[in-house]
Image (cartoon, rainbow, N blue to C red; front, side, top):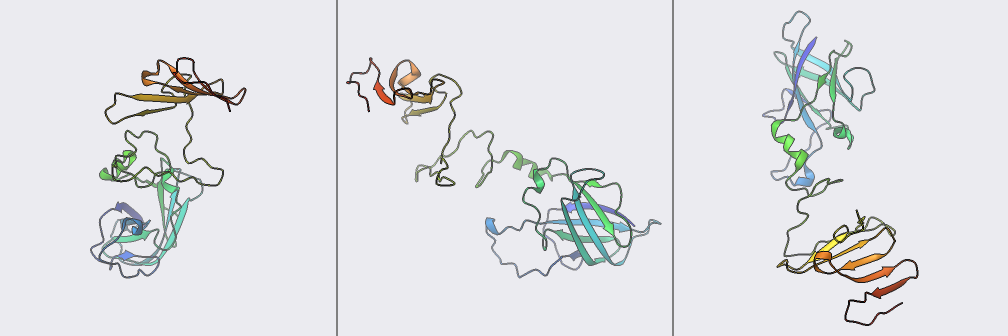
Length: 242
C-alpha cells in the first residue's frame, strides 16, 4: 500500500470519509479561542502495491518524528476501521490522544504512516506550515506567549493599566537586567509629550542609579556598600541616609 498524504486546514465538509479516534460531541455554533481543539486533520490517498486506488476499511497508525529516519515517535495515534473510498481517507490527529504541547517546538517534523498489516511506509513525509500559518512566527497580536524575542510594543491601552502577576511568592513580576553602566540601559520613564525622560539602572558597582532627562546628571543613588540612599550633590535637596 502507498499513501500520498496532506494536512487539511479546512473544516471537514462531512464525516463519512474522516476517521476520529473517539466520538465527537456536538460542536456549538460559536467557539471561543480557548475552545479551539489542539488537533489537525490529515488526509491522504491510499493505493495498492499495483497502483490501484484502495477501497474498504483499514487500521492506520500515524507517527510523528523529529527525524527523517530512525528515532522515537514524539506522537503516535492509531485509527481503526478507517473508511477508504477510491483511495481517499482522512483522520483527525490529536482528537483522542492529546498532542504534546511542545511538539511543534521542533523545527523539523516528519509523518510516518503504517497501514496494517504492512510495515511503516518510507520515506516519511515532512510537515510544512500552510501559507497563512507562517505568519504565526511573528504574530501581530499574542494573547499568551512563552517567549517574545522582539516586541515593538508591549501594550497600547489607555483604558486599563499594565498588570504583571508574579509566578510565585519569591518570583519577580518584572525582572530587568542592565546591559551597561549607563543611562537607559535599565529603565527609562517619560511623560506623554516626550520632553521629560528619566532613567534608572543597576550598575556593575551594585548601586542603583537614577538620572535626569537625557542621562546627563545623576540625581539619586542607592549604594550597596553602605546601604545608603544618597541625593547627588547637584540636586537642590539635602542628602539623606537610611
